[in-house]
Image (cartoon, rainbow, N blue to C red; front, side, top):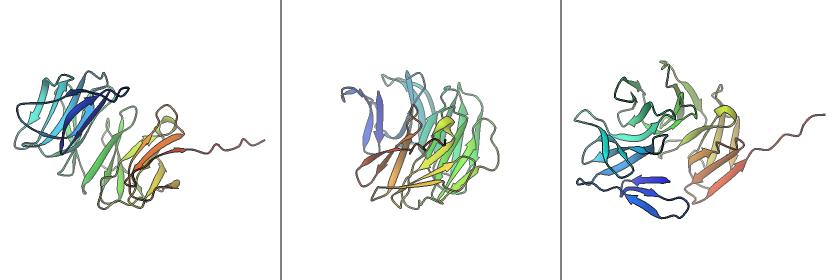
Length: 239
């Protein structure tokens, strides 16, 4: 199944095999839903809406609301993710904050950033997150033991557009990101300097995704209207 949402679209649930829409989520209040994410059991989802009010809510696959976070102090949400164990909701806010909430409703804490956050990605074990900032940096935070200083990755270009990065490779030891200079940047998690820059696109690369089953395979999507699949070169064995 696939979930889609957007500023001019309603939330929809799709069948990947057939391409058919299985369900359109409607409500009595017409809301602009700009972010959505699955819970790991695929039985419920979480959504963020920005119009007519800022709110986060969970619902089942029929659209029945289960939990709601709303109110005057609720900031605009731009991205969401649920950790693989289903115990934490992570939200990216327009006020330059990362909100982390434990399920069921319990502890909440905030990670502040100095610059606007454009995207969020979780490691496969849910223990780490990375965010892209419009200051041309990617910050890595520990979700479990939050520190005051993140690991920082630099080299890519990002000033105007939403750029998405991801964890990947063997044991998620690498980070990849798109870039406004039409290239893809790859870092090792212990180094702030890119170890590889991939060229091939002709316009901004806005999203990358590492294959979780084949750690040597990476996909990238660009404003040049292409999706490219990259394979790591296998080094010959030394005799």
